[in-house]
Image 1 (cartoon, rainbow, N blue to C red):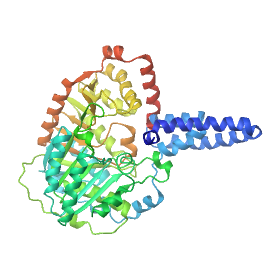
Image 2 (image 1 turned 90 degrees about the vertical axis):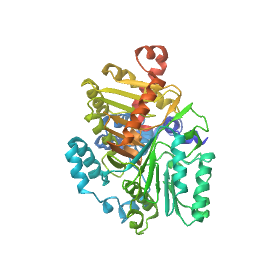
Image 3 (image 1 turned 30 degrees about the vertical axis):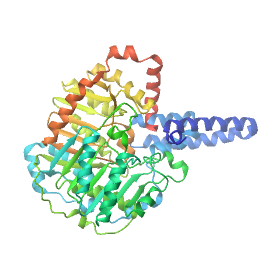
Image 4 (image 1 turned 60 degrees about the vertical axis):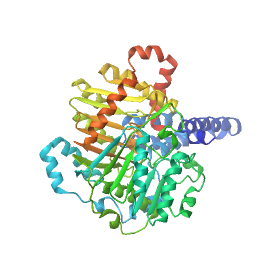
Length: 508
């Protein structure tokens, strides 16, 4: 039942049926008032259609709402609020606006690094400055980075680092699921609390709605683990609210940080089989760049706690480590309160800079026309563009949307691959052996515009080689979705559903 309630497609269908039911009721029980009712609703829907048209979002994200407002105005009005508007509770928005702690207020850029980057590569410098100017998160030099191409080595490393914590641990995840993996993490956290280590946890209420018991934050607090539940589900209608915390962040003592596509649940290390082999990716950072992830975590924490604590003790951490380091690292975040779709533009900037190849992994593909044109332009100037998506899906309708892009990509010589062993959940982008990103951002409307997201831009780091090796290992495990494959596997009904779902994909 919970799965149905949390399914956005189910909500859309329910609202459409609701409108039909209201119309039928008026015709049967209050026919004399139906014309007046219909005129009022149509006038209201026109107002909302104008608002949707003036929205700054791309055209293909507005079209389904405008269509519904015209044809099914009652449903369209509801869906406007829950699909186009970035809606948070008034109290939380007030906290956000009034909090003394912001990324901007603690922004510190090393001008020497900025100058050094400008001298090395002007194009990368401009990409870096875009992130710095829109998120207030700077670039760092000489950090150690380690890329993980699967969940088990990622969490093996993380568990070892958690055991070494001396001062504080911050964890922020979209999903925390009870099971063997979370039990291992929780045992360490409880032990660290006994040792006097400060432990804070943030999890998203909808992300963890089906995987954690009710009021689980209270249970953690009793263990000495401070906890925030992001955007709690209340009332029931908020089940379809936007603005979810999709970030995955671990900070240990302000020196070590982790991010990537992985949540804390057993399927992410393939202890639990849901959709074949779960392919994911993450990255570890040791060095000054961890400060940016500390800032992201604390900003979210203060967003809900509305406190005025001195955060300098978590930021002014002396960095002494012996791991080999190279290149530049720049964490970044996506914030729906920011009118600029930063995460989308980071991807776009990388794609537009490509000269040799673009390799992408994403579980979901739902792109606007500008994004598609950037991929087309890259391929048409001779860039090898390859996109890897799942073969075994977690959501059928989103899978059909993803596959529907094949007919648009193929004429431009862009290769779409399906990962045959199972489900690709990693969100990686690699360009020309020199610049890459690993993070939480899917190639879809929800990640680009509604969710809180994060990632890390990598330039000339040793982890770039590891990301390329992962792609080289990945391609042979995939099947290319070409004309022959489509003719064999894409039935007319499957193609039709893909095109219909694509139109309404921003609603999901």
